[in-house]
Length: 407
Image 1 (tube, rainbow, N blue to C red):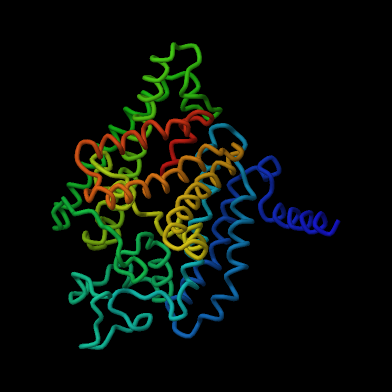
Image 2 (cartoon, helix red, strand yellow):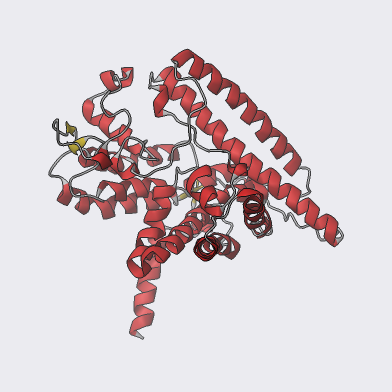
């Protein structure tokens, strides 16, 4: 009886913050104002994270900031089927929540490399090797926006837009792909423009191919496993669609990043070195460790760790960290699908959770044989794990909706 009462209260409280998709408010242009205003507490949290002696205040603001973000972004929904991308975006307040958590992660605040306190560089002779960076001795000249915006606002926006943590202490140990473009500004912008056009063509070609399959790629959804085809043809088609989906994800990510790079370097006068590549040729991976830790993008690494990795580490050490991080990844992706009214797809949870034991198998192979998973056989192993075991991701959702699931 008491448990039923508690569960009812918890259910009502949860649905007050995150309603059922069918109970969401139809999105109108006026709703955009609510989305903007709901980020104000987050901006203030970021401001405090760059100020000393604010830890207690940040802790007190964290619950309210998270509730405001969840309650606002899950409150609205575009009712037309063409609004699927917007609904998917409304299901991603978790990225903001990660920024909120990051603001209270350390009592001293969010520090850049070479800082002993927010905004205060380490005195000469006191540098720690772990905090040093290749460019630590040469500070990048301030951008035009850094000079024009108020210091408090620039600090807040800089921290909120720092996803990978490049140049920050929380990004220590992050793998950054090697730069292949010249770092002279005009040459860098020209090279980025060329790659953006290439990525657009690849993305468009893959999308066009995917939409040739009936139902697949439509907002209403469709399966990549066509029941009217014989087994072999069905598998060949599903594999081709799956490969095209993966290629469109890679091209779409790099295209979006290229556009942001052109804005950051071309319009905001940021240094080209602050925009290194986002991916490192994931199709060339010869082990799952290399795929997930290096060649796949690391933009959401901190997000997945906060969503599940640190809980897993508390419960089961390093193994728990691996399982928890991938479970956090699955929950992150399904939170967006939930906002689209797609329900909870267990195949997504299965695929991402499966990566943990597969990675552990690689480690056991290395310890047993003394040889790392690599080379041609390692690449075939990666293709099997991603292209074959990953196909159930497209079985019950449209590829248009499900293509983001490997993010």
